[in-house]
Length: 296
Image (tube, rainbow, N blue to C red):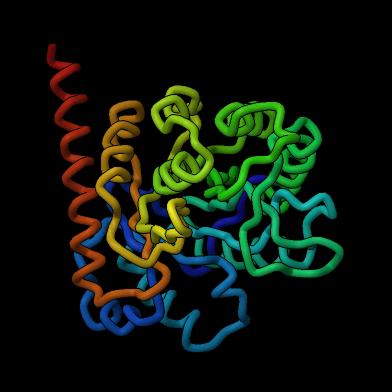
C-alpha cells in the first residue's frame, strides 16, 4: 500500500471520540454563519467529486473548523465486475485534497454490467462473495494509499446461499484485508428485526478491535397486514432500541467517534444537534465506566 499524500488544503485531523453529524446542504449556511457545537462532520464523498464550485468552496471553509470523515456510497465494493478505476482516481483526488481523518464505504454492491443502481444492495455471505469484496477492498486501499473502514449492511432478506453469519463475514473481511469497521448499530437493529436474528448475538461476534467508528440513525416501520418491515431511511430520530445497542457497543469498545445520520426529511440543525447530544451523553457514560474500571 502506498503512503497517503498530504492534503493540499488541510492537514489530516483525527476524528475525536465524540458525536458528529453529517453535513447536509440545508445546514451549510448555518455552518458558515456560526460553527455549531459538534465534535466532527461527515460528508458523502460522491457529493464533492467536482473540480470546483460553491459546494467545494463551502466544504473547504467548514473543514477549517471541524475534523472531517468521508463516507463513500458509490464504490460498489461487492461488485463482481470490479471497481471503476476512474471513480477510484476521483476519490483519491478528493481525499488527498481534504485529508479526512477517516474514509469509509459499504459492504454492499450497486453496479453490474455497467449499470448503476441507486441503492446499497446486499451480498450473500459466501466464500465467493468474500473473495470478491476482499479483492475490491485491497484495490481501493491501494488506490487511496490508506486503510478504509467498511460498514455493515441493513438487510431485508436473507440469502439461502449464505454459509456464514454476517459478523463472521465481517471478521473474515478484516482479517484478509486489514481494513477497519464502521459499525452501524441501526443497521444491526433493522436487520435483526427483518431477518430474525438476535442483535445481542451479533454484538458478541463483532471483531471489536477493528471498530473505529459507530453510526446511529432513525428508521421507518412499514406494515403489511400483520407483518412489519423496518426501512433504513435515516429520516427520523434514533429509536430507543438503537440507543441501547449503542450503549452496549460502547461498553465493548470504550469511547469512539459516533455519527448521527439524518439523510431524508432533514430537520432544522438544532434538532440534529440534540440527537448528537444524546450520543455524547452515552459517550460520557462510557468514559466514566472506563475510568472507574481503571481506578478499581
